[in-house]
Length: 81
Image (cartoon, rainbow, N blue to C red; front, top):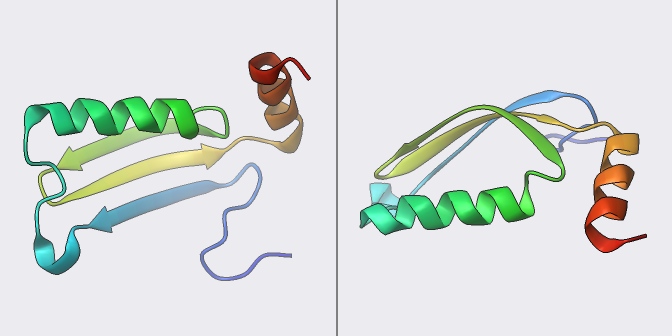
């Protein structure tokens, strides 16, 4: 069962976010690299990224949530389960 805004296995999603009141999310060039580093660490195991756009005050991601079996394989490879 899923509700509005939920991510579903195997489905494509356009995800975007803006800074509060249009404030910048990325101040320095290092902020972009740090965002991508965190993204790769936390999201790559559960989503496949098809496109992304990082703008100073917002970002867009086009992703597909991996299938459940793919998630268990990634988890086992990462944590030795």
